[in-house]
Image (cartoon, rainbow, N blue to C red; front, side, top):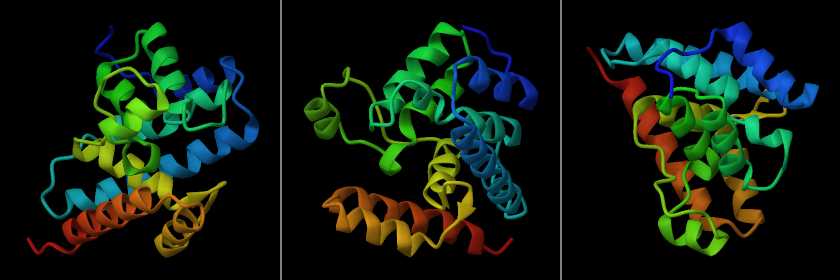
Length: 176
């Protein structure tokens, strides 16, 4: 496993080489742009954020969509990232970005390996949150994402997204 993050160009090339569609690549680039913007705003609030990790993790978060568009793309993407010997923090972002996290019980129900699938670090949370604010490659209100999850009978995920939204926005409101 390497500790060196790929460059932005290398990350996009990884998506291309793994046959991600142009739509997925555009989505990843939009998520990365928003995630970096959020991370920079958090830095002004004295939050320690690894901007480079946020950008590269966001660019690669949907790597698994090269093989599947189910929720399993998180697991598939993490396996691809491991095979490419990407740094562990990038693998964790890929693995933990879906649904603002997947609980141990949900992971078991999905047949996923026993592991942690809930964003833990600030960088993981930023990428997961930015992903919930981008539909395709355009920004959408968080309320729309939450409402869609509720309509899809995913009330637990909707609640996790709401809590993640509250956590990030409260950090953004912090006074220095």
